[in-house]
Each structure stands twice: as C-alpha cells, then as structure tokens.
Length: 464
Image 1: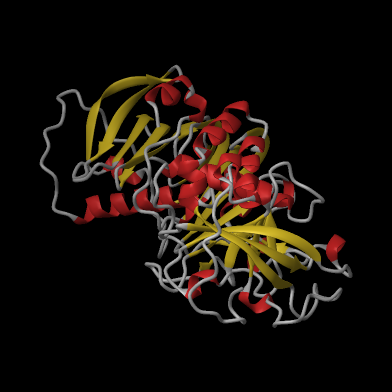
Image 2: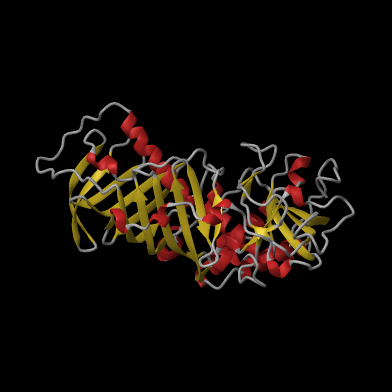
C-alpha cells in the first residue's frame, strides 16, 4: 500500500495489516470499540497489579485529578479503531460504583459515508453489548473478546504508583494537565484534566504490529443524579432477539446468490452452517474492507478460497449474527454471537442504516446473511411459507464455483478497484464488477478465475 495514497487520502486512511486475524471486528465494524475498551481496561488493571513504579514527578506537579464516579457528557471523537479515520459526535456515560459504561458514536459507512450507523457500546459489570440501528435498535451480546470486565478509565490518574504528570496543554481551547498511565508495553493511555474534570481521553493500542487509537473530548459534564438511570441499564431489547420480519411472513422462499470466504484445508471447510455469507454487492463491500485492512495473501483464518452458492432462503429474516471460524481453524469454530437459532439473519454491511436495514426491500451496499445450523433444510426440502414460525429457513441448491482468493485479489488487482470505490464514496460498483467477472468465466483476460472444484470427499448433508 503506497504512502502517497495513505497521506493524500487521510479521511480514508487504512492502517497497517493485522497479523492476528482472530479479532471479530475485522468483519464486523463497531466491535472494535468494545475490544479497545476491554484492552484499555486490561492495561489499567495490569498497571495497578504490578509493583509500584518509581518515576520522578515534575516539581510543579498539580493535584492529581479525581474524576467523578458518575457522570455523562457529549463527546467529540477521533478514532482509527476500525482501520480508517472516523470523526464525529457521540456520548459517554459511566458509573464506576455500578460498574457501568455507555459509549455512543455516530459513524459514517465505509464506501458510502452518507449512510450512518449509530453505534452504542454498553458495558455492565462482566457483560458487553452493542446496539445498532438508530430508531429501530438491535442489540447483540458479545462473547468474541473473552470475559469482559468494567474498569474505570479515569481513576488511574489519581494513583501516583501507576501514572505520571507530563505537563500542561490546551485541548479545544481548554487548558488541562496531562497524565500518562505507566505501562511496560506499547499501549499508551493519557488523560488531560482540568482539575477533576476530564477534557480529553486518548487510548493507543498496538497489537501484532498494528496501531489502534481513539480520542474522546468531553463537553460539559452532568454529574450524579443528572445522569438518567436508563442510560446505564440494559435495555429490554437485549433480553430477546429481533422477531422475524413481518413483511416476509407467509411468503415463498427467495433465491440468493451467495458468496463466502472459507479455508480449503478439509471437507468441513465447505460446510456453510453457522457461517456468514453475502450477496454480490454485500460481499464486494466485505472483501474491500477486509483487503484494505490486511492487504495480505492470508486472510482471516487462512481463508484461501471464495465460493459461490445457489441458496433458497425464507424472507422472514431474524437479526444478523456475526460468526467466526471453522472446525479446523485456530481457535476452532464456528462461533457466533447469540441470536435466533433458526431464522436467517440479515443486515446491511457494517450494520448501517435504520434497523440495520434487516427488513428493508433493498440496501445500497447489498446485504450480509447468517445461516443458522438449526434452520438448514434437509436434502430435497425447501423453506415453506410458514418458515417464519416453524420449520427450516434455508437450503443449498448447488455450489456454483470455488476460486482461489489470490486470483481475484492478486491476479486481478482487486485492491485498485476497492480503493477507487472508497475514494468515490458511492458504493462498491467497481469491486462488484471484479467479483462478478471472477466467477463468470475462467478466462483470465476477462477477469475470470479457475474453478478449483469440489472438496476431496463429499457429505451431502453438510456441503455441496
């Protein structure tokens, strides 16, 4: 990836490739917020658990900040959390005594910035949730990053054993004292505070050679009882899964031309149960996102193949469930966030739009789908009109073609189309045409790729 492109296109800045590809947010933007908050908490706990640091303080060191335990504030945020620059408005609230935190950020969608996503991260004790969908919210509980645990992101600055004063600065016209968390690794957490009032929180994390960062600048604080109780409580929508789309109930199944990245190490890698697939537009957006983050021949869990399937699915969609892994990947999978065990999940890429556009007639970026194992039809059967209430919800008609991902990504220079689409910010039209051409023929001069054929062995119930 050229430095010229990186520096001349700062609003679309893509960070260095991720080497550790087990992070769920690579394929599900928004989850990186929860990962970074969790990592920041772990770094703070680690600093507090080791022996006291011995660092000389500055002679003119001010009184250490004691940030209020319960407060809320509007925020301005800047972040490279998801691999490209995001700036905008949001909201932050926490109650350290109740071990509760809420962070809302209004995000622009990669490749179509006018399509917004209101992303809320909610951390309650040892549980973590994300809420997307704006006025039609959908809640997902996150297990991807292991055990979550609330940590006060500010209290460390009051502890001289784990923090250091580094001087005065001015942030957005406000004078504040700058404090750094002492750390033995490349993690950097700083707090600029005006007395006991947080002005700016900055977290920079490095993992496998990749740097992630977010900065929150806080407006006027509301304290104590000024913070509404419901902001720091689990909403009712998190206690159940989204019901089947009403506009799809009582309808015949619809065809879906589905694409999926997968490994090619065994027969099990052709099993698409509990996996995420997408239509042509949706998968062009996904590959573009994944490729910009990686620009590496090793994608995901050694996902070296791309397959195209002909499916029939019930249009009574449930909520989309991000999934990762196969039985022979490390860690083994598939593993999905909790959701309906039978209904086909659907959302617009990157959870964009009202209600993630789950029940919408269309999406400018196509759709992502999740195929639950419990909803698969047995061989020779298809979903019925009553699939929204009972029975199977999806069936495999045929595996149409499987190609080496390197053919599309390397041989046919997919990245150049992806970059052009992201810069134009009108969707992924060029990327779609490249993906379509790869499966349309085996003629390399026309952008085609060879079909690598069926897996070595066959199991009609698990793959086609």
